[in-house]
Length: 475
Ligand SMILES: [Zn+2]
Image (cartoon, rainbow, N blue to C red; front, side, top):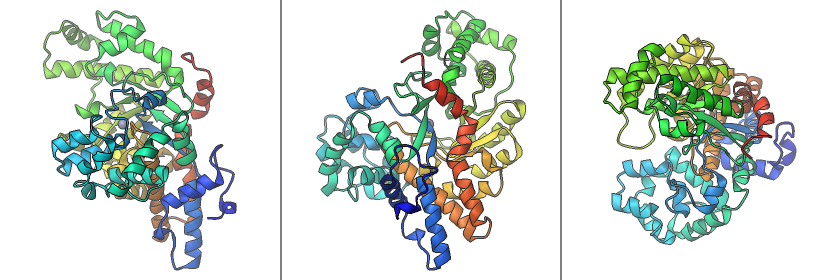
C-alpha cells in the first residue's frame, strides 16, 4: 500500500505511515482483492481507511505497566512467553482437554521457558484457530516477527517477549502498533485504578462490590467510613463517586457472572433489615440477599447517572470454563430491556453483545434510546459471530449506539491481535453489506469513523475527560 493513499486526516499522532501500512498488512489477506477492478479499488480503499482509523478501546483489564515490567502482580505466574496465553486462550486449552499437569507446568515459573512448547504442542493445533488462539498468534507474529508459534520459534519468541517489555511498551503496542487512541480499564485489584498513564489507560469505577456482597473491605476503609447501617454504606458509595467520578469514564459491573440482571427497585426501608443481618454475619435467605443487591444496584446506578457516567454491564458468555449456565445468560436480553425501561435517563452499555444471544440485543438497541451495545471481547469469542452481529446491527439499529472494540485483556500484547481481528471483522461486515447491496459504498466509508471511535468519544464524554485527566489528583 502506497503511503499517499493513507489520509492524514484521521491518523493519530504517533502512527506513522509505515505503521499504518504494517497494520493493513496484518489485517488484510487475499480477500481484499477481487477480480473486478472497481470493486478491488473500493476494497483497498475501505481496508486502508479501517487500518488508518484509530480505535477507541472501551474495555480492558490491563495491569499497570510498572507491574508488568517488574513481573509483580498476582495475575503474573511466570513472566515469560506463557503469560500471553494466561488470558483467554488458557480456557480453550482446558476445554480442548489439555491434561492438568501439562497445563500447570506450562504456566509455572519453575518450568524453563524453552521447555514449555512440550506442554503446549499436543493441544495447540486444536485451539490456534479460535479467536483466542488467533489473537495470540497475530500478536506474536506482529510483535516478534515470527511466522507462527512453533517449536522452532520458541527461543525467538521468548527472547523477543523479554525485549518487548520495556518502559513505554504499552504506548508502543497500543498506539503505535494497534492504532488505538485510548483504552478504558476495569481495574481488577481496586474499585478504581489510580493509573500512572491516565490519558492512555482511562478507568471505570467498579460498582460490582458496591451492590454484590457488598464488599465492604474493598470500599469502606479508603472512604474513611465505618459501616454500621445502610446509610453508612450509602455514604461509602457516595465517596467513591464524589472522589473518582470526575476522572472515570464509566462504571462497570460483572454481576451477571453470579445472578440474573432482574434488579427490582427495592426502597432503602426494605433493604435496611437484611443489610443489618449481613453486617452481623447472620445467614441470609436468597430473597433477603436479592433485596440488598437490588437496592444497592439502583443506588449505584442512580449515582452514576447523576455523575453523567454510562453504566457498563457484563452480558452473555462467561470467561473461564466448565461453569456457564446457558439458561441464565439466555435471560439477559429480557432483563436488560427492563433496566432500560426503568431508568430512561441512564445510558446503559451492554457488553460482549450478550454472545450468543446477540440478535435479541440488536432488537433492544433498536427499541430503547438508552441501550448501547459494546462488541468488546466478542471478536475473539467468535470472530464470525462478530461479523454477523455488526452486519445485522448496522442495517437494523441506529449506528450511533454501537461500540466496536474492547480487547478485554490483562496482558497488553494480545490486544494488538484482537484489534487486528476486529479491523478484519469490521472490514468484512462492511464489504459484505456493500456486496449484497444493503449499503452504498459511500455509506460504508461514512460509518467507519463513528463505529471505531466517534461513538465512544461521545458516549463517554472523552473530550471533557481527556482534559480532566491531564491533571489528576493522584499523580
Ligand atoms: Zn472484562
